[in-house]
Image (cartoon, rainbow, N blue to C red):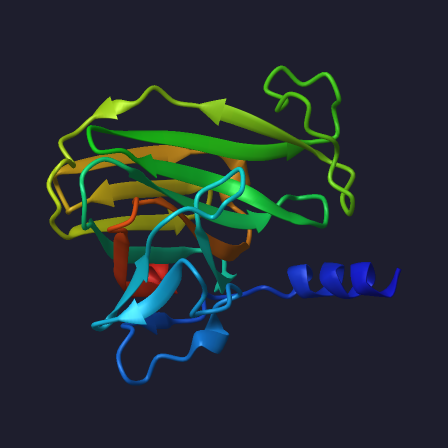
Length: 221
Protein backbone atom coordinates (compact mmCIF):
# COMPACT_ATOMS: atom_id res chain seq x y z
CA UNK A 1 0.00 0.00 0.00
CA UNK A 2 2.89 2.40 0.66
CA UNK A 3 3.72 3.17 -3.04
CA UNK A 4 0.04 3.96 -3.73
CA UNK A 5 -0.14 6.35 -0.79
CA UNK A 6 3.00 8.11 -1.96
CA UNK A 7 1.57 8.44 -5.48
CA UNK A 8 -1.64 9.98 -4.15
CA UNK A 9 0.37 12.52 -2.14
CA UNK A 10 2.47 13.47 -5.14
CA UNK A 11 -0.56 13.93 -7.38
CA UNK A 12 -2.14 16.20 -4.80
CA UNK A 13 0.82 18.60 -4.58
CA UNK A 14 1.12 19.51 -8.26
CA UNK A 15 1.44 23.23 -9.02
CA UNK A 16 2.92 25.23 -11.90
CA UNK A 17 4.60 23.55 -14.86
CA UNK A 18 8.31 22.89 -14.51
CA UNK A 19 10.08 24.59 -17.47
CA UNK A 20 11.68 22.17 -19.92
CA UNK A 21 13.88 22.75 -22.96
CA UNK A 22 15.42 19.77 -24.72
CA UNK A 23 17.68 20.86 -27.57
CA UNK A 24 19.70 17.58 -27.82
CA UNK A 25 22.96 19.52 -27.86
CA UNK A 26 26.11 19.01 -25.78
CA UNK A 27 24.10 19.66 -22.58
CA UNK A 28 21.61 16.85 -23.27
CA UNK A 29 21.06 14.57 -20.26
CA UNK A 30 19.37 11.26 -21.14
CA UNK A 31 18.40 10.78 -17.48
CA UNK A 32 15.60 13.30 -17.99
CA UNK A 33 13.82 10.71 -20.16
CA UNK A 34 12.13 7.57 -18.87
CA UNK A 35 13.12 5.75 -22.06
CA UNK A 36 16.78 4.63 -21.99
CA UNK A 37 18.67 6.66 -24.62
CA UNK A 38 20.44 5.42 -26.68
CA UNK A 39 18.63 2.17 -27.46
CA UNK A 40 18.19 0.01 -30.56
CA UNK A 41 15.70 2.49 -32.10
CA UNK A 42 16.58 5.89 -30.64
CA UNK A 43 19.72 7.97 -30.26
CA UNK A 44 20.85 11.58 -30.32
CA UNK A 45 22.42 12.30 -33.72
CA UNK A 46 23.49 15.65 -35.17
CA UNK A 47 21.76 17.59 -32.40
CA UNK A 48 18.34 15.92 -32.70
CA UNK A 49 16.57 12.85 -31.28
CA UNK A 50 16.43 10.22 -34.05
CA UNK A 51 14.05 7.22 -33.89
CA UNK A 52 13.80 4.62 -36.63
CA UNK A 53 12.96 1.01 -37.37
CA UNK A 54 10.53 -1.34 -35.63
CA UNK A 55 10.19 -2.16 -31.95
CA UNK A 56 9.48 -5.81 -32.75
CA UNK A 57 6.29 -5.61 -30.69
CA UNK A 58 2.68 -4.51 -31.12
CA UNK A 59 3.48 -0.79 -31.25
CA UNK A 60 6.14 1.30 -33.04
CA UNK A 61 9.14 2.62 -31.08
CA UNK A 62 8.24 5.02 -28.26
CA UNK A 63 10.03 7.74 -26.30
CA UNK A 64 8.78 8.93 -22.89
CA UNK A 65 9.63 12.09 -20.98
CA UNK A 66 8.17 13.00 -17.56
CA UNK A 67 6.70 16.47 -17.02
CA UNK A 68 5.13 18.21 -14.02
CA UNK A 69 2.39 20.81 -14.23
CA UNK A 70 -1.23 21.60 -14.94
CA UNK A 71 -1.74 24.72 -17.09
CA UNK A 72 1.13 24.37 -19.54
CA UNK A 73 2.37 25.01 -23.05
CA UNK A 74 4.01 22.04 -24.81
CA UNK A 75 5.78 22.33 -28.14
CA UNK A 76 8.27 20.37 -30.24
CA UNK A 77 9.54 20.11 -33.80
CA UNK A 78 9.60 16.95 -35.88
CA UNK A 79 10.40 15.81 -39.38
CA UNK A 80 10.23 12.58 -41.35
CA UNK A 81 13.37 11.49 -43.16
CA UNK A 82 11.51 9.11 -45.48
CA UNK A 83 8.13 8.71 -47.13
CA UNK A 84 5.03 7.39 -45.39
CA UNK A 85 4.71 6.71 -41.70
CA UNK A 86 3.19 8.77 -38.91
CA UNK A 87 3.90 10.26 -35.47
CA UNK A 88 1.46 9.77 -32.59
CA UNK A 89 1.95 12.22 -29.70
CA UNK A 90 0.41 11.49 -26.28
CA UNK A 91 -0.05 13.63 -23.17
CA UNK A 92 -0.55 11.51 -20.04
CA UNK A 93 -1.94 12.90 -16.82
CA UNK A 94 -3.91 12.34 -13.63
CA UNK A 95 -7.02 10.25 -14.27
CA UNK A 96 -9.03 11.87 -11.47
CA UNK A 97 -9.10 8.69 -9.38
CA UNK A 98 -5.50 8.43 -8.13
CA UNK A 99 -3.63 7.05 -11.14
CA UNK A 100 -1.98 8.30 -14.36
CA UNK A 101 -3.06 7.41 -17.89
CA UNK A 102 -3.47 8.84 -21.40
CA UNK A 103 -5.28 12.17 -21.54
CA UNK A 104 -4.90 13.37 -25.13
CA UNK A 105 -3.52 11.77 -28.32
CA UNK A 106 -2.71 13.60 -31.54
CA UNK A 107 -1.95 11.39 -34.54
CA UNK A 108 0.06 13.25 -37.17
CA UNK A 109 -0.47 11.42 -40.45
CA UNK A 110 1.07 12.50 -43.74
CA UNK A 111 -2.29 13.74 -45.03
CA UNK A 112 -4.37 14.40 -41.88
CA UNK A 113 -4.47 14.99 -38.14
CA UNK A 114 -6.61 12.84 -35.86
CA UNK A 115 -7.40 13.59 -32.20
CA UNK A 116 -8.44 11.20 -29.44
CA UNK A 117 -9.43 12.18 -25.89
CA UNK A 118 -9.04 9.67 -23.06
CA UNK A 119 -10.96 10.20 -19.84
CA UNK A 120 -11.85 7.89 -16.95
CA UNK A 121 -14.94 6.70 -15.13
CA UNK A 122 -16.05 4.23 -12.47
CA UNK A 123 -19.13 3.40 -14.57
CA UNK A 124 -18.60 -0.03 -16.20
CA UNK A 125 -21.44 0.74 -18.65
CA UNK A 126 -20.24 4.14 -19.86
CA UNK A 127 -21.02 4.51 -23.61
CA UNK A 128 -17.43 5.58 -24.44
CA UNK A 129 -15.77 2.78 -22.50
CA UNK A 130 -12.69 1.47 -24.31
CA UNK A 131 -13.62 -2.07 -25.21
CA UNK A 132 -11.86 -5.08 -23.66
CA UNK A 133 -9.73 -2.83 -21.42
CA UNK A 134 -9.83 -3.70 -17.69
CA UNK A 135 -10.03 -1.14 -14.92
CA UNK A 136 -6.76 0.51 -13.84
CA UNK A 137 -4.97 -1.54 -11.19
CA UNK A 138 -4.41 1.49 -8.93
CA UNK A 139 -7.48 3.70 -9.40
CA UNK A 140 -9.96 0.94 -10.41
CA UNK A 141 -11.25 3.39 -13.05
CA UNK A 142 -12.09 2.54 -16.64
CA UNK A 143 -10.67 4.42 -19.64
CA UNK A 144 -13.10 6.10 -22.04
CA UNK A 145 -12.00 6.96 -25.56
CA UNK A 146 -13.46 9.69 -27.77
CA UNK A 147 -12.41 9.63 -31.44
CA UNK A 148 -12.61 12.74 -33.62
CA UNK A 149 -12.81 12.62 -37.44
CA UNK A 150 -9.49 12.98 -39.22
CA UNK A 151 -8.92 16.52 -40.51
CA UNK A 152 -7.20 16.74 -43.88
CA UNK A 153 -3.88 18.59 -43.93
CA UNK A 154 -0.82 18.23 -46.17
CA UNK A 155 2.05 16.95 -44.01
CA UNK A 156 3.59 14.86 -46.80
CA UNK A 157 6.82 16.83 -47.14
CA UNK A 158 9.90 15.81 -45.16
CA UNK A 159 10.27 19.28 -43.65
CA UNK A 160 10.37 20.44 -40.04
CA UNK A 161 6.94 20.89 -38.45
CA UNK A 162 6.17 22.57 -35.13
CA UNK A 163 3.45 21.08 -32.92
CA UNK A 164 2.11 23.11 -30.00
CA UNK A 165 -0.47 22.51 -27.28
CA UNK A 166 -1.58 25.07 -24.71
CA UNK A 167 -3.57 23.69 -21.76
CA UNK A 168 -5.46 26.18 -19.58
CA UNK A 169 -8.08 24.82 -17.21
CA UNK A 170 -10.35 22.45 -19.13
CA UNK A 171 -9.25 23.86 -22.51
CA UNK A 172 -6.49 22.99 -24.95
CA UNK A 173 -5.47 24.65 -28.22
CA UNK A 174 -3.51 22.37 -30.55
CA UNK A 175 -1.69 23.81 -33.56
CA UNK A 176 0.74 22.82 -36.30
CA UNK A 177 3.06 25.42 -37.78
CA UNK A 178 1.13 28.28 -36.24
CA UNK A 179 -1.78 29.04 -38.56
CA UNK A 180 -1.41 26.02 -40.85
CA UNK A 181 -3.83 24.00 -38.67
CA UNK A 182 -5.34 24.42 -35.22
CA UNK A 183 -8.07 22.90 -33.08
CA UNK A 184 -9.62 24.07 -29.80
CA UNK A 185 -11.09 21.49 -27.42
CA UNK A 186 -12.77 21.76 -24.01
CA UNK A 187 -13.05 18.64 -21.85
CA UNK A 188 -13.26 18.32 -18.03
CA UNK A 189 -10.32 15.91 -17.82
CA UNK A 190 -7.92 18.46 -19.32
CA UNK A 191 -8.09 20.34 -16.00
CA UNK A 192 -5.72 17.87 -14.35
CA UNK A 193 -2.01 17.44 -13.79
CA UNK A 194 0.13 16.49 -16.77
CA UNK A 195 2.71 13.77 -16.02
CA UNK A 196 4.26 12.29 -19.18
CA UNK A 197 4.84 13.04 -22.85
CA UNK A 198 5.04 10.13 -25.29
CA UNK A 199 6.14 10.07 -28.92
CA UNK A 200 5.11 6.87 -30.77
CA UNK A 201 7.01 6.91 -34.04
CA UNK A 202 6.38 4.93 -37.22
CA UNK A 203 9.19 6.34 -39.33
CA UNK A 204 10.61 3.29 -41.09
CA UNK A 205 14.33 2.73 -41.46
CA UNK A 206 15.08 6.38 -42.22
CA UNK A 207 13.16 7.46 -39.15
CA UNK A 208 11.75 10.60 -37.55
CA UNK A 209 13.70 13.41 -35.87
CA UNK A 210 12.49 15.33 -32.80
CA UNK A 211 13.98 18.62 -31.59
CA UNK A 212 13.30 21.72 -29.47
CA UNK A 213 10.95 20.25 -26.88
CA UNK A 214 9.59 23.09 -24.74
CA UNK A 215 7.32 22.88 -21.70
CA UNK A 216 6.47 25.98 -19.68
CA UNK A 217 3.55 27.48 -17.74
CA UNK A 218 0.70 28.49 -20.06
CA UNK A 219 0.61 32.01 -18.60
CA UNK A 220 4.24 32.52 -19.65
CA UNK A 221 3.13 32.92 -23.28
